[in-house]
Amino acid sequence: MIELLVVIAIIAILAAILFPVFGQAREKARQTACSSNMRQQGMALRMYSMDYDERLPDRRDLKRALPGGYRPWSTWPTSDPRCGWAAVALETYVRSPGIWLCHSIAGGGLGLRVEVSQAAVGPVRTNYWWWRFDRPDDPVPLDNLWGKGELQAVQDLKLARNPQAGDPDGPADVEIGVDPYFPSTIPTVPAEIRGRAVHFGGRNRFFLDGHVKFLRDVRTN
Image 1 (cartoon, one colour):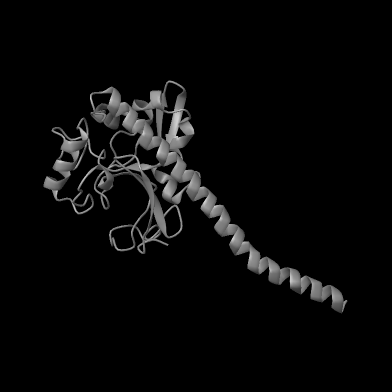
Image 2: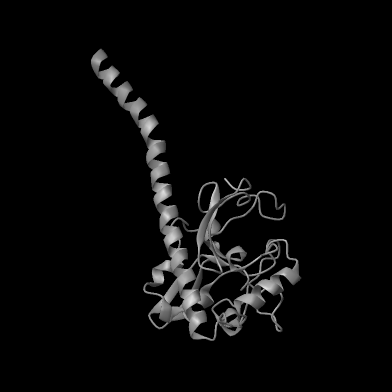
């Protein structure tokens, strides 16, 4: 009996040590898969631009017309960063509609902003965010990129002085895609999601030049 209790105790200790390691490995794999999705989104956006006289898509019509329409937050941000429109506009340049869905987001909570768009292959679900394509205003705001070339996009963002967009020196500084996050420093964000992010401690991002980077953010946990 004593030997059995000792074995059980050893197994319990090993499990306590290994379970967090397995959890970290699983999260790292999900983060890597998410990064791959964003890299493919960035490539699709750049291929579209090359085919359309070096201009970015202007599909404000889709932004308004997709099921649910334009649905900005009333707190933070006061815009609608869902990218269901991109799943339709860039369909020709995407191999699999699965790149629009981050599987680290469980139903509910952060997943409430899932958007369903109708592409040629059928319904496509998206839960990534795309900044700078988040308002369908006419004329196009300085901090939105609808129909602009890269040079104009960077120049307009400088003029916009939007603290979220920053002061970019080039396309490599212009953040486009991101997995959802809610900074703990924004008091208007509901308490149940404040400080939460899809991936532990930060978020994946892709930029206008197509590169992808994970940002560690102390405002999320």
